[in-house]
Length: 509
Image 1 (cartoon, rainbow, N blue to C red):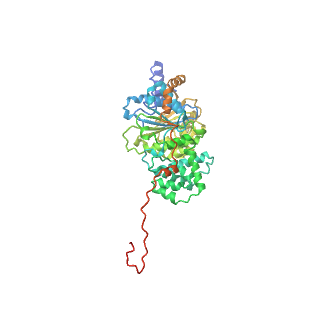
Image 2: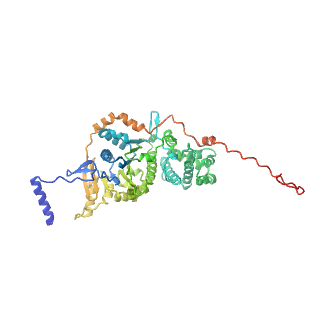
Image 3: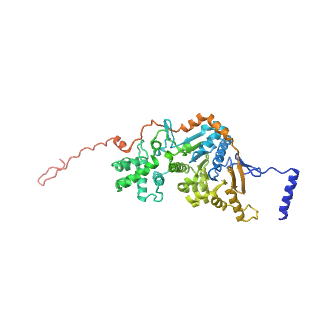
């Protein structure tokens, strides 16, 4: 031990003897209080109030308390942001694959600031309550700037992925011919001037007699029309494509209503406006098919990010934050966009907060995505994880500046700590910060009582975007063809009279 270290030790015991030790310095940013460190220092939410462009990664096994921690931080951040001008308050889109986050945040707001519930929107494609069902999400009526052919290609990929998983043959995947069929039929259904159209016309075209011919007659896309009129698609391939579309988009009457109802269709410009808190609640999929939750999480998040990426750079308006619970479930499809947001999202006012059960699930979905998350996030909050996940996260850490401790010792100690954390205990990892803390105690009986007291408000929030069951059934492709006016008959042409050699009259007389 050198003379400087001896001096610090002597000064510490001298101040301790005099009772003059300064209070421990607070950790984290200038956000709301979320916990207390082991040395008694307060731990604040690491995303500062005025820096809502920083991204964050939260790891922890099921039951570690990460959802409640995030919900508490969201609610307190909304309360503190009331001091900002309305035009500068961030928009938050929460992709909730379990449904727990929606309940936790709304309960906390009902207890601490019930007036903020007016800014909450809950969307649930699987909802079927009373005389209302789903919400209007007709892809033909979404105001998006992305090219339709690119949107059709991504939608075909999602349909192929989810239908393969539902069919139990994930190892087979989807063939190139079927991918091409899905892409062009979806493109044809999206690119039409009929206001009654929906993406389900692609399914009708594969099922109905002369369906390809009918779809080619109503589409405006030259590319789709050329495929529908020129490709030789056998009946087996058509029915297989229709089956995939049915599994993903029309697995129930509720989902069919969601993608075909055009009245009151939600728009991303409204959902991402300042001071909005939007939940996509996917915790109770139709028939318990969790693959449907994954499909809708990917579809909604992909379209939302496509909309936000159209912002000008550098962006001077309000920020938007995408919060994804169980992020490992959407990593295979969103990995490229997530990397783009983590690396260049600040220039367009976009950030991502990802919650996932472990590093291994992200790494198996996309190896480079985990490295991008650990490199480009402002902080990492880690709860209890498995030994392998803990070791993988610990490998990204190094000794503090000025420390002589070997790197291997630092990583081994951190991995051991993460593997043995009790519930509601976390480790905050940031620039020059590596501290264990316990999240703030929450009065669960008070939260439940507040939710029961505001039950009518919460039910109204959940039902605000739902579509009445009495909505007219969707228009099918053959019905749209039957409704089209008959083309005007061209005037009959006079037959040309053949001229004989001895005929001196004009051949046109």
